[in-house]
Image 1 (cartoon, rainbow, N blue to C red):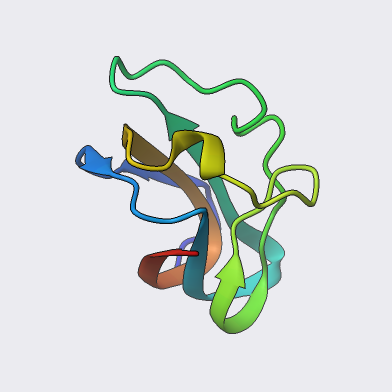
Image 2 (image 1 turned 60 degrees about the horizontal axis):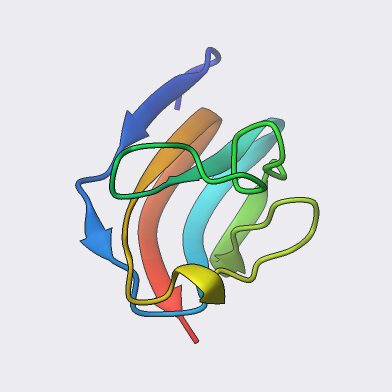
Length: 98
């Protein structure tokens, strides 16, 4: 939970859902943003940090969104990576949901 931005990337995995849900706690001065990358590690258009909504508050299962859109069904059963950018935030869990 740092005042500066930090980033990390997941190992690749097969997406088994239509959206991502996050268990997080983030201050309004910070937040969590997510970028989705394909199997070749290319950023997926429309699912980059530039389009990502900043998620904040205290949530057990809040959807990851990009311009208020959470649908990832076009990438279901595909290999992806997730990149996270956090500031003044704690991320406890990530879940692929239908």
